[in-house]
Length: 529
Ligand SMILES: [Zn+2]
Image: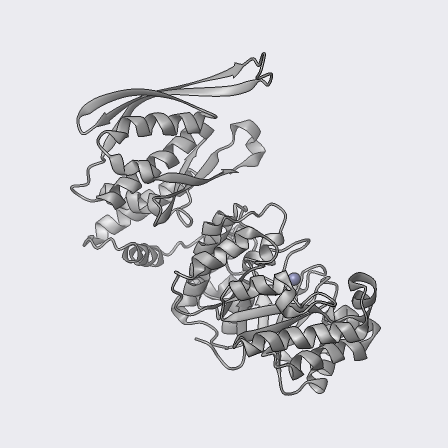
């Protein structure tokens, strides 16, 4: 529900993915795009097509993805000094992305222009004007990210403002003021915003904050209160160094504290789910203390508080956790849990009338699995199988009787002097009543197991030959137990048209991998059926 007062712009897929430890596959990025679209964000910055082929591939994939709410923007710099837009390869990669929006980052600091870009003040202004104009002529929505605006304003206010005015004259749809180094305090930032509003009063402003002073959300909120229109941020505050402004916190603040209807109530109720979903795909441990969405955000440990919460939920909570899809851990709302579960079933197209008792028991199974380290937010295929297995009449296409894995270190010699690890798996599977016994080698235990199981299944299910595993993620769940810790494995598979993710959890990494793998193949057969 876009409001005219404020616009949410997500940059998780570009700025957020700069965070140490985050590496998103093209498919991860497509799935996150869909999720953010469901959340109701207006703009999603998809990536930097000029910087890496993965992002260019993402924009190609996106051509066939239908979005309900969001528009996607491609990010890149203004043209290079002394080139034309037509001859600048980065500019042309933005054209090739075929997105409705283009986000152009340009220097808005005299110091940066002289010392880092090593060009003249005039050439930088020409770069801004020509590049903005070039994309406006192509009919794009153009956001101008004024890089280092605040630091530049401190040193040479007139030049920084001139950069904004230049982009505005060239037709930019919004001028986004960036605290690129994240060092601003709120009062200094507000002074610069006021000057920008004074200088350019016919083009809307945006804000892009980093969290190096721990003020990214606070500064973004203050900017909105000062009249800034577009707010940029990242899910879970991801981003390099100390992160970007957390767009989920900002979203909840705008809606619940400022009464700005940036998303529908039902979309807000998915906030916690979106946070967990993105942490699963980014393979980042969720921050339990994240405002609104963290597991501890509404947890009450002290007996005194807990007793107060029992009497009245509002006693020690600033909002009703259900509004953002979270729950207070003292009073887990059964009803909310059941409602979420039914919503998920509907989304997966599982249309099976369940009695109240069946829903309750399913919910208990999910909770039990979660206590064993499962997490279904990023693994919908495993969730669907979990549900289907409880429905009457569901028959698993095969059953594993037994498997053995042997690993050897092969001594190198002669022409292949390198030592190598070889894994061999032997499996006994019961497929439609018949026992299959196969063996296969692989470059690791999971690879060997996968090959042996496929061999056993391929006779009855030739469709499996088109199924590929495309990603494999391992997360240590309780790192304080060191090597005795539980691990969660996420496996992403594709049959060439659809992608799905499955999960397994165990204290044994091979077992966790096997559980995720077995689900991946079972789900493939379910799709093929
Ligand atoms: Zn940034």
